[in-house]
Length: 138
Image 1: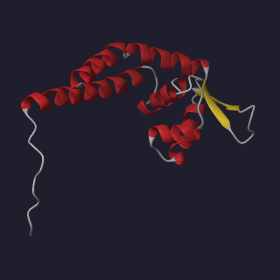
Image 2: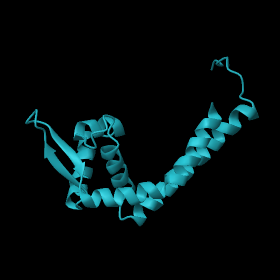
Image 3: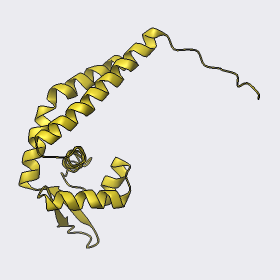
Image 4: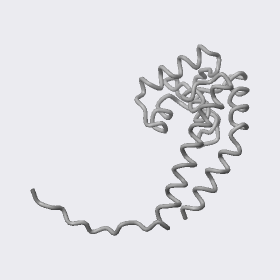
């Protein structure tokens, strides 16, 4: 067996510590987001779905299944199932495009807005902790 030559240096504690702290903050954020989502009657995946629709890159507060699949790196069939369950739960609604009959947008319902807003606001402190951890990386 031939040995592979290492060309990289071992990171110092000073380099590794901020990355470790970032990972801790990221993990805490994920755990808190799951807890808060459940407190607001959402599964973590439904909270993420609502966040991606509300926080559409074009600020339209709407998204298509294809766009969601791309942003979440999930199969379109997984998104379709998630959307169907969220629609049944009264959290999202479908809205046909005015420009293209083949396109259907997803929007939050008033109930989806309410639950999303409560969860989102409850995570403000965790988002700030994550921002600080990211800032320490640079």
